[in-house]
Length: 251
Length: 251
DNA sequence: CACGGGATTGCGCGAAAATGCATGAAATTT
DNA sequence: AAATTTCATGCATTTTCGCGCAATCCCGTG
Image (cartoon, rainbow over the protein chains, first blue to last red):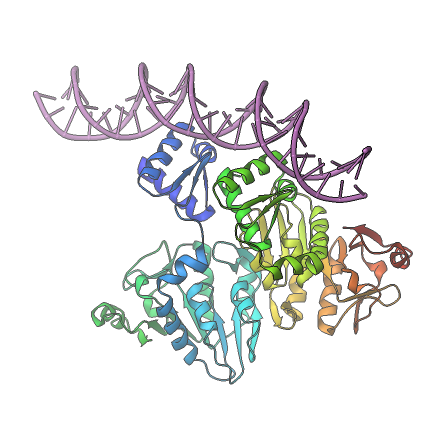
């Protein structure tokens, strides 16, 4: 195991668990704690994590939803959400992915006619509590706390029984060659499955996700009906996606 | 559990409940009160909270609304929740009903060992996002917005596949003759079904629900393992329930 | 092939941190 | 005023830390 590999492994653990315990890592890698502590010290010096007694924690106090990610491109996300909600027609069944971007769709859902929202995210479901006309179907399963969505065989089976008219897909990265991707293997599989069941799939893409790649591919860009992107994205940046026959909706 | 994590956990509790009780935290983390008190002392020195006898309060003066409401109605529910959480043993599978009373159980769940929480309420699931040791299983189905729980055939089927060790049941009324009841037919059926699958069922009962009747019976009082009631309820009022062989846990 | 610099790792050691317990003081309740 | 709970302090134990040192390994050079 190379040192650099070990360090990125530590970062992975940090992202996944929100903490690193020196002793545990040392044990799982069959290395001395000294080595791990050295890594942690160095990484702390580089500003990659915060060293604490016993291990390390993320550099910024973990506020995944409400402050950090939200403020970044809030206004852009809102426009994406509004554009997505515009696509919904009376009586349709809409599958909403988990995540902060798709949560924005909820806030712009039409209130003048009835439709059905399906989601595997309890967070999304909770936000729909006071919506006047939306019927809500919740997909169950083992909850993936990292992104707060139901996963596993139970979720897959439940999804299989539905034919949503539209699936609004959230991703962490989109790339013309490497397609749409996300950081977790299981999640990628679920998203792919939902897209397979839905008549149409639209991806909500904030500007910072374009031309990026994450670990697990969900689908190629050509596998979805369209991309919804903020209008300020340059045409040059969109061209490679257009070449893949992807419809581009600017919000 | 790292010390720094414990401290931020304390801050979380402070923000959520408007107070921290040293004894409670020590218990839920299986640590000595000394340790927690030490934390509180240090955090008070850092200006993160205000140390008071028994625990700590936010640095800014409490909102009047908060303290009053807390002392009156919430405090009873909190004790019910704490008592219920006390019943949980490592590795068990616990089914949590929807509702504000059972939501209080979530806030008192042990954090020192692992267990599984099953729920058909997205609200409950969302509250468990930051719990360190709880595995969460979400039951899907058509969402009943009135009480925010999944219902219907899909939910029933998913529940059938589980054998929870304990079901914490929420009701709107309890009566020695008319049993445990709630306002909605479908909900009653679901609750009954969950109770049938669980090894033990405990009902959380605030004082105002005793000797009341709602439209749809869930189970007779003799159909559950026990009732959890606030300790200030008079023995005379409890006697009819004791006669039904119901275990009574006072919180 | 031999050699040496640089990087990496494990171990020993004393220091620092964290935790629990005991004790007597202080606050709160009865 | 007595009883109970909560507190702060000192102390002992365990865990974790950082540093120096030596062994090892990688790699380019003579």
